[in-house]
Length: 294
Image (cartoon, rainbow, N blue to C red; front, side, top):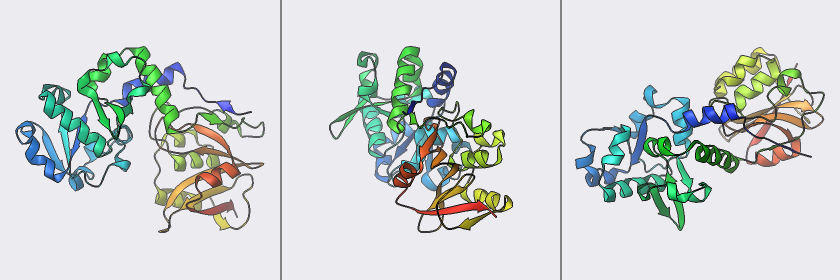
């Protein structure tokens, strides 16, 4: 029987604080600039390449909240504005700007059906696209929503990211893994690579890190893990790589066909115990590599 993963009240409190950032970011296509010429005088308009190399705008929570990784390639400019800016726009321009965020696949766009009370959402923040109604979350709106609405919304949204279910925690799992298995993180940043290194080394501080592929590969080498063939067994690490050989995912084998796993870098991605068959199916688009202590 699977375990239902439920965020704690303390975790929900941290999620509420972090989910909608103070810094508001909008995206525009090249051809949109003339449409908003008057409105863009008192904000920063940053070309895409410069924006994605700007350290101030590449913090882990901004990346997670706005979901930069799924942003359309048509997004040519980022608009950095104070929270009051979008509220001061004329209604027609605001509606047009928010509709563009849906079109460009910016984060902080939630289905209207997730809200407990739709009457709480001003029409200014509602956008329809392809027959579906969205609410564009901005700081001004988020601050006005009741805590109960935010709690309900975030729990539902977490379940939209991935199922909140884990295999039971086996008795033979190491104690440091039992502490985190079948639970959510309180903060964003921890990814599959840091989770795997934590599981392998037992160093608890690692679970909160955001580890990149090359760093991960060097860590495997220093831990005397080498590529082997065969089926995974207790203590092994499995990675999945794309055609260029870049690691897309990693997981730690507990033994008996069970793995300690985290699928992404947001606080909506829980730490789970997964069956090997389910893990293979989920990452079947990539080639798997098995590592074992030599």
